[in-house]
Structures are given as C-alpha cells and as structure tokens.
Amino acid sequence: MEFSELIKTATVENVLLSCAGLPAVRGTLCITSHHLLLSSCPGGDVELWLLIRNVDAVEKRLTGSSGTITLRCKDLKVLQLEIPGMEECLNIASSIEALSSVDSVMMMYPFFYRPPSLKLEEGWHQFPLEQYFQQISSQTSQWRLSTVNQDFSTCPTYPPAVIVPAAVADEALRKAARFRQGGRFPVLSYFHPKNRTVMLRSSQPLTGPNRRRCREDETLLGTILDEGERGFIIDTRSAQAAKQARMTGGGTEPKSSYPQWRRLHRPLERGRPLQESFAKLVEACSDPSLSMDRWLGRLESSRWLSHVKAALSTACLAAQCMDREEATVLVHGAEGTDTTLLVTALAQVILDPSCRTLAGFQGLLEREWIQAGHPFHLRCAHSAYSHARLKQEAPLFLLFLDCVWQLSRQFPFSLEFGERLLLSLFDNAYASAYGTFLCNNEKERSLCKVKESTHSLWAWLNRPEEQQKLLNPLYSHNALVIWPSVEPQSIQLWQGLFLRWIRPSQHLDEAWAEIQRLVEENNAPAKESTGNRLSQSLSDPTAGVS
Image: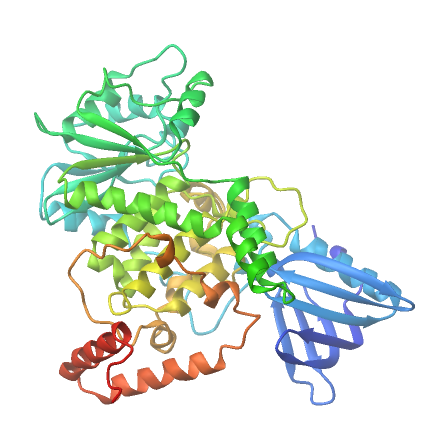
C-alpha cells in the first residue's frame, strides 16, 4: 500500500483553523503520509503540526459550497477546519479518515521518524530485567532468571526472560504454563526488601468445569511459601465472574489444591464498561452548558472516579498484604494483561520509593506494562471520541496514570516527576513518534523489529533539557510507604488531563515555573525546609496569615 493512494487532495488554500482558547488562524492546509500541517498566511509560519494517528474521529458538515471538518483527537484536543469547496472538504475528510485508520504497525510514523539528535539504539536497553534481577539476587537466593520463554513458545505475551522460584525447573514451568490462560504462569513482579515478601502475577488457571489440576502449578506456588506461611490471591474479577469463567474452561485456584493460599475477590472493570466510562466523562467535560447539578450528576454517572477509587483500593490491599501482613501475594484476573498489571504496578509505586523516581518509574512501566504484555496496540486503538464500533479498546493505562496522579496530589513531595510526564505518557500511548508503546507484546515487537527500526521514548525523555521539564521541583526523597486515602472525598478529577484543552493553564504553568525558580535559588539543604514550609501552608491555609 502506498500512502499516496489514500490522499485524495494534498493541499488546500484559505483554510480557517479554530481551537478552543486560541485565536483562529487562516492558511494553507497540507496532508502528508503521517501529518496534517497548516501554515499561516501571509507569514508562512506552521500553526498546526498534527500527527494523523492522533485523530480519533472525523466529523464533517457541509454548508453551501464549503464545509467544516471537526477533528477529535486521541489526546482529547478538538480542532475545527473550515474548508472552501465541497469536494475539497470531502476529500480532506476522507484522506484523514483513511490515514488515521492504517493498522499496519510497520506503516506507522515511528518507523519513519529520524530525529538528528537521537540514535536508534538509544534507550531501548536502559531497563533490562537482568538489572532488576541483580537487585533481588543480592538480597535472596530463592529466585532465578529463567530463559524458558527465549523463543516465546512457552508464553507468547511474556518477555524472553522471567523471574521464577529457583527451586522450579524450566520443564515444570512449561507444564504450569499449559495450565494458565495464554501460558501466563506465575512470575515474580516485585520483591519487597523490607520483609522479603513477594508479589507475583499470572493469568487464571484453566481448572474448567471438571476442576482440572496441575501438580507443577501447585508446586510452583507451594515452594514460595514456607511451612505455616500463608499467601493471598487477589482476583480482579467478582466471585460470580470467576465462577462463570470455570464453566468456559477458566476458573480459580481451589482451596483443596492450594491450601496455604486465601483468595480475595476485588472486581475491577475492564473492556467496554471502562471505555464507555472514559467517553462519558470526556463528553461531560466538553459540555460548557452544564449547571453545577448537571455536571455533578454526569460526573457521577460516568463512574470514572469510582474506577480510580477501586483501582487504588485494590493496589492498597496488595501493598497491605505484603507490608503489614508480611504475606506473599499473587495477582490475576482472567488474561493477566490488564487489571492484573494495573494492580501490581500501582502497588509498587505505593510501596517502593525507587519506583517514585523518574528513572525508577520508567523502569516500572517497562517491566510491568510494556514487557509484561499489556496489549497497547489493541487497548489504545481509539480514545474517547471514536465513532467506530468498540473492539478491544480500554483505557487501563490511562486509569493507572490517573491513579499515579492521585498519589502525586496526596503526596506532593514524594514523587520525583510531575504531571507533565504523566500527560506525555498518555499522549504517546495513543499516538507517538516513538516505538516504545507499539504492538501488544515483546514477541510482536521482535517480529516487527521495533527496537532496531524506531526510536525509544525513554531516549527522548531522558535528554537533560527534556528531563528538566518533567521533574517535580518539590520532590524530597521519602523512604516510607505512601498510603493514599481512598475515601470518595479524596478522589479528584484530573483536571490537567480532562480539562487540558478546555481551560487555560497559563497561570498554573507560571506558578510552577516560579516554584521551580525559588527551589533552584535555594541550596540543597534549604530545599527540604522549603518543602516543609510549603507542606505546612498546604495543610494549614492560615499559615503565615496575621
């Protein structure tokens, strides 16, 4: 397929571009294989440089001999193009629809993007699992790095190397994999250095209606616990859903076969209900005519904040089992690629201060989302505006980012990075110039040669000038576990994302820039006292008022 076949009209003069909060601009519109460009008249400055993959929905309205195209983007921005000429309007709309729907990974922009400041190999091997394993092996010898999945034959959605109990041989892992949906046998997700407890993740066991067993799977989970020790299985489905899954070949770990494990059901939505919740919230945020009562009603009926609360609560449960109960935890739902990863990743941000640093958080994303096989290509195919019939889209990764934002708001000094990083991750998961979030798993990335042919997002974000923009100027290392409040009153709308293009952020940006300047002016020892004074004034609004 040639891109030129999809472009019916490449250039149109005298197009008017409108965007909420910005003055309208008239100029020349150009369509390339991956971008929509608008250069203004008469100066010729580029006013719009939009990655076409970012377009979620195209709406057209014809009036007389001209037409208006509304572009609703995956990053939630809305643009309007007034185009003279009915035929040109229809052709432009058709071209954008066709180009934004190209589904072949190797035709996407990351395979063509070549910034002069970056090298292709940069950033791809920044967070190897071997490095994470070395941290664990320096504290315990109970785990080993297995290459049982070297050729992706044991589990197509796991990376080539996984961390498993040292006492379990690769052949037993292969047999356990055949007993788990999609081959996702239990692997180590996190080692808690404080008390040497661990968190594992997997998919559901294939017990089925006949209560099938697998000795190797039972042994694998049995060897992790000493005699008399107990473990918790956090199942992210309801008890009813798990029971229904058994009738279709799935199921749960029966008490008789896993006597040391206690199962806790904490249902988390995924799939269509979550996607519809996201769409309802964005629709409510975009309606300027709402009264206070109607806004609160629509916010509640979207149920998005309920999903945030449920995710944080379940992650807190996993963290509590490890930190306070000193128990091992296994997390799984059905496939083990969605809500499972949401819980394991969030629990680590709560428990581990290293995951709250900029580098540690990137390593966490690489390990628990990207390499762990979250299907980004399927889940992020459409955002909140798409009119396409939903297939497998679901904003699980956005839900995770929202939960991290809630943590950063409740603990403003404990995360080294700020909101800008979270927004950048959201944008790049849905449409990117980089290959980091391409495909659904490591096997697909290997087949498409993503690491050899595209640039890594981490290479870009870790350039000193970019990194500076992402840092939280109030950060002060906090070695403690950060237990968030999950009371309904504590969960807030993430305005920085959901209202990003609706309300102006200039004053907020200026305030943060001033905070950064003040912090930089103080020397390192004074930074902590600045943070403490700010902390006091945040918790006590009357501080400093006479």
